[in-house]
Figure 1: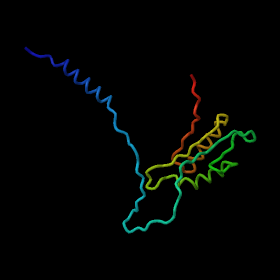
Figure 2: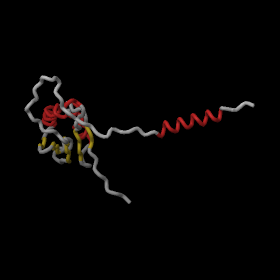
Figure 3: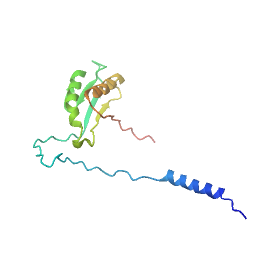
Figure 4: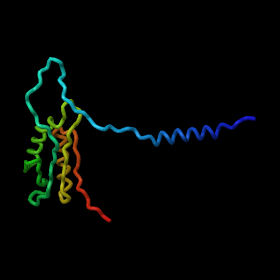
Length: 145
C-alpha cells in the first residue's frame, strides 16, 4: 500500500508560508549617540555647540505678498527668500549629529490658507541650501464622532 504524500506536503508549505507572513521582527529600541575621538592621541575640543532640538519654518498667510507668506524660523522673521536661503546654508552643517548617525529634519509648518507655491518655494530653498531631511508638520484634526 502506498501513502499519498501530496496533501501532507501542501499542508507543510502552507504552515511555512503562514509563519513567514506572521513573524514580527524586533524593532530598534533606541540609539546611543556618542562622539568618540577618531584617534587615541587626539585632544578633545573645548568648543561647546548647543544641540539643536528642532528646526521649524512657520508659514502664515500674508495679504501684502501672497506668494511669499510670513516666514518665521525660531525667533527670526524673513522678508525674502534669499535671506532664508542664506540662513539655512549656515544652519545646514549643524543639522548632522556627531558621527553622522542622525540628521535633524527641517519641519515646514504652513497654515491652511498659505498658497501651495509658498510651501514649494520653501521646500526648494531647503534643497538648495543643503538640508538633507525635510518634513511637513500636520495639524491635529479634531475628533469627529
